[in-house]
Length: 501
Image (tube, rainbow, N blue to C red; front, side):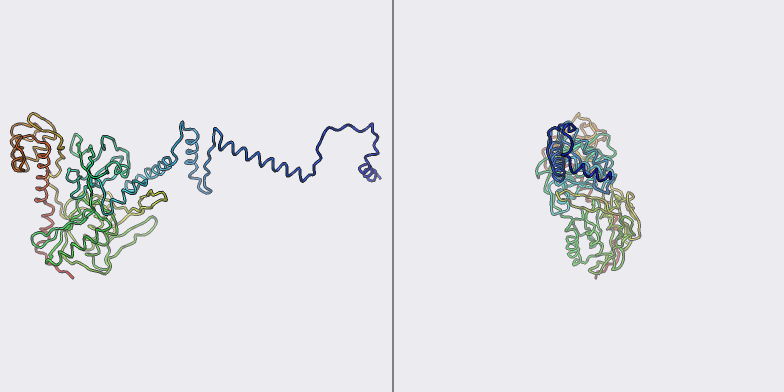
């Protein structure tokens, strides 16, 4: 009965006395569905306005979301957001990102891994192509310093007297300490005919050396040869570029027709290059099926590259190496030593036993990083140890005398380390400059006049300009003519029977 009364009251509100009804305020009648839709659009519009304000307002909020599953980058993204929002002026996003990548490579502590922006990547490629413009020296970064691995044969760097292990301190007065090798190359290279001033620290010298080197077109002609007495070929490989193996085969074929009895293979001051080029040249000497090199990548067993069928030169070989022989040079020397039995002559090689891969990014920049290590045929890792010669022969001490700046004027009364070096050069060449004490006196002046007379120059007794160049050229010619390492390598081949097939 109570339920029936309740229904009756709900269905018949008009029967309630007027005195009991309270007056209502203004209101809008709306169906539930329309009300829900209105609320939905209100929330949507509010959210849109909030996003617009945060994105385009005076205080923009930049949030770089960390990719799902890559929590290790959270610190990097957080740092970027803080820098982007709070640095006192606008930042260059591209440079900041490049800097972050550079930082990752620096953290590896590997001098052979490097990030190269587009310009640096282009220069790197040109170094292994047909030619480039610069001074012609292979460099690397070690412990924050830019060190010369070796100058390229007949390059301005070699003619100026730049030596392996020289440390380049400044380029045109700007310190390059802390730069990567690619960044340093970008400063050193330039248009043909333009000068670049280098300050160089050399082991054994108390004072830095100042050099002004005029850039030139550096042809990447990498193989040079000459026939020595006794039908011994002296073949020098200066680097392993894209055409080196073909150049080598051409010269070798020419010499084979001249009753070739032995080869002195010279990779001194050769900083390396393409691994494949070293393998191709090794294959000309290593018997089919014997190992040339082993390459071991992360978490894998070493993969052995064996010699394949093809033309083989079964002639006695000696290999010349020094502290500037690195990477592919050491692969070649190791293959010939352990799989052919060739004698290694000279000084211990540089010691680079890792392999790098170059990957191009979409913007033209490059990532060059170590992907593995290489081992000799017998499984030896020579990294940071080098290949020790079977017959050790050192350069004469005068081969390491410092470069003399032709713009410097040395005359009677001048005292300096450069005068001392000049006196040592004059003494080696037989001009009797007196005691090499760094004091330019009458005996030194007389020796300079003798040099000028022998060189067809005005006899002023002052060492500068063309006279300085004449002195260094004469010393370089003496070093080449009396090369003790080459003479020893040739001696080991004399009388050894030769055959070709």
